[in-house]
Length: 239
Image (cartoon, rainbow, N blue to C red; front, top):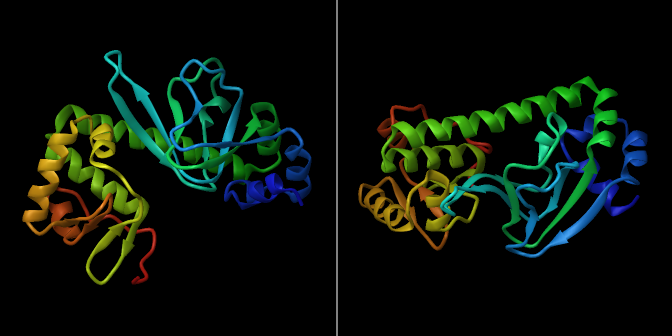
């Protein structure tokens, strides 16, 4: 079994497709390594395929007319991205960049279309993926328009807890390393403002700040402060 085929089989959505069909599709896929900070695709690049992140971590982002970056999502190993190529042709609107050394596999749109036609379950899974990511972006846009910087930051921390939270004896550790600038780029603020707000939340006993790591010590309090419910963590076991 080739390395590319092995990675395809590890993708949760593609596991529902017959192994022999994946094996035939593998011949049309291209695997490429990317250094930290290297673009995987750029705005205006042709949306010719969907990508699978095999190793590393990537971010999806866009730039405003004045050059300000907004991070839309982070991609983890085993996840598909660039999925809008399945439903709309033409150039891409956003760009993808490797956050750390990464390996991505490009699957041409026509190849993935044929695979999805053979598996209604996989096709539904991709539809749900597109809907989930669009909903998160729409929710974040609503926060940008109607909430304060502090409310946007707290809402983001709750969202990150839902995606990357790891329960510990001291609280919920976010299993993703983000700088203050990263957080600012997600909520449409500045690094200085995020630093001030994190220090305020730490002083209030809501969280503890480490080196590019955050421990949420009062998840219920954070949720209550933005009139939200406590997020469900991806893993409940103590670490």
